[in-house]
Length: 387
Image 1 (cartoon, helix red, strand yellow):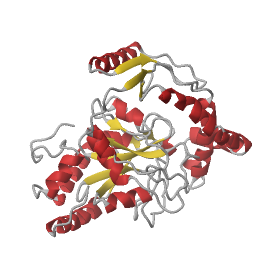
Image 2 (cartoon, helix red, strand yellow):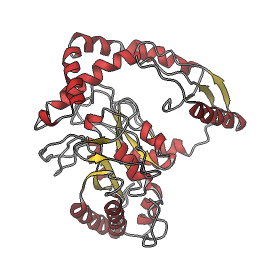
Image 3 (tube, helix red, strand yellow):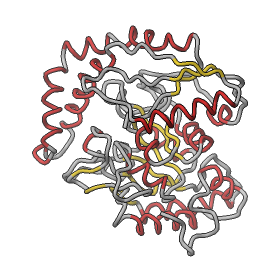
Image 4 (cartoon, one colour):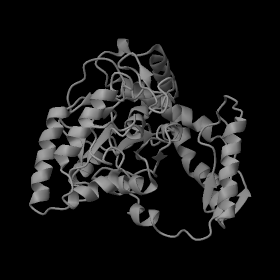
């Protein structure tokens, strides 16, 4: 969705850091940025369908409060900037339907990650679409229809954070939060030309859930640049009482602007075993190889090397399906759910006892097995999707 003649110069695609800087410098107002965001959302919704709900009235009220704080001299990393979050994340006063049909109750409190975004000054303009319980690499469902890719409305933006990706790629918001268990940030990032990060567990709290989908799912940023993704990651990062995973803080934004030195890069083109054979598309292989050659030309050391994945794909299934079963207990009317969702929940019930415990017990050995690659390499370069 290209900027229209009515857009203030440069704001729709200025990016997260640029909008925050313009607000701090007094070059624009939060009210103006939020109004523009809401106008663009309304214009795109009939065709792109990125949002499950829009907080127009409340967002404008919060923008006016941000402007008062800015005028009083207050400065925060995201003060007054409009953002969106995926509809698996609690926002006080709004329901959390996670792609499911039915009438969900409103939440009384923000999720910890939303609380931190608000503490950084962000204005949450809405919640973005996800397939039912984030299960699929496309974003569609009977509850809201199909979300489309802004680069080509005949295509999907991917999933499950497809609504957030479409919103950022189309300039409806400068950045957004998604969540990722098996590619749900990374797939839509790749398919909409964005930067997506799935951080380690605990980097961004999943509270009020101590763990999401038995430890496979994390919140993560979607943005148009590395610097903006790092800024959002820093703003949302941190823990609360009850979080089982509490990694030491990092400064992602500082790292994004630091000279990396000569990196040892592993070029990997072999997928982990999933039980469904995949063939790497020649176009995808060519694109990844071209990037590897470019990195080598820039002076980095690039060698072909494969992580030793082992049965990691097998251990994923009980954790994912048990997580789906957990979520189906929250929906107001399970009969409205997609038959595939109900089937996955049944599988989760069957695998949710001893098999789930075995899958969790395998985490440590598998992490060490896969992580051994980093004894000789700093970075793994691999296709996001095979096709």
